[in-house]
Amino acid sequence: MKQYLDLCQRIIDYGVWVENTRTGKRCLTVINSDLSYDVSRNQFPLITTRKIFWKSAVAELLGYIRGYDNAKDFRKLGTKTWDANANLNQDWLDNPYRKGLDHMGRVYGVQGRSWFKYGGGYVDQLHKIVEHLSMGFDDRSEILNFYNPGELHMGCLKPCVYSHHFSLLDHTLYLNSTQRSCDVPLGLAFNMVQVYVFLAVMSKITKKKPGIAYHKIVNAHIYENQLELMRDVQIKRRPLNRAVFHMNPKIQSLRDLETWVTVDDFWVDGYVSHEPIKYPFSL
Image (tube, rainbow, N blue to C red; front, top):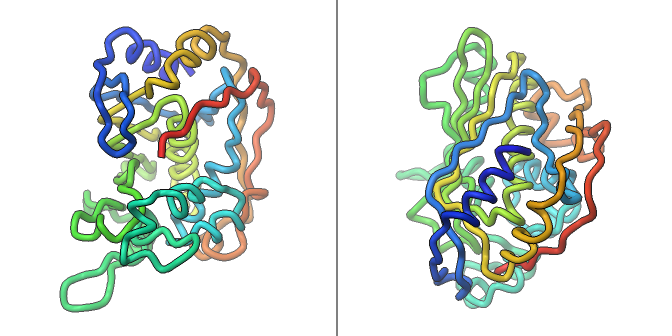
């Protein structure tokens, strides 16, 4: 919580106004922020200064792991986070690569599970990483990359958290996740949960001890129409006690995550928060 609130305060105090071309709105912006979450000690980074629907974040992560490209499939998992980008973005609605209602294109998990390669076929990045780590092997390039410059025009949104680099050191698994852009009031609460849970589940299915998840944000910003709520409401609230994260011990493999696992296989104890804050979303 302190890391999150410190970043919010830094943006308020030192941020520079930038006009965002995609949304047409101004953002108060800082460059580079480094957060970390100690998964080995179960320091679950669930925000308490406003209510966070964390299961939606986990559902979205499951959709990425499964390589989904359709907002309907994400809704079935329990999240509506892709409805607007798939169906309300006029540039995407006019894009010839869009295949119809709810189609997202070649974004996020699609790249992670089926990155097209020269000469035909595809690369399943995640499967390779799980296979290597399960054998205790780390070639220093256990990297899941969602950012494919050659196919950005084929998706409804550029990936924000675009790289997950796993490292194995003395039977302990670490994660470095890089995020190019972050809507701090809205997106960061989700992103923090996902980075933490990704290391937790990858440690579980590869039979390794979880270490620390390092989360780098390059461009961190607060939109102009969010600033008052952040500055005058959320940042003034007192943080409450940390919740404890749990997952179903029956989760043992990537195949489990691809097939039967649902958000109900994850739960938290002791989550108490302040009231929700309805921040505006910029499409």
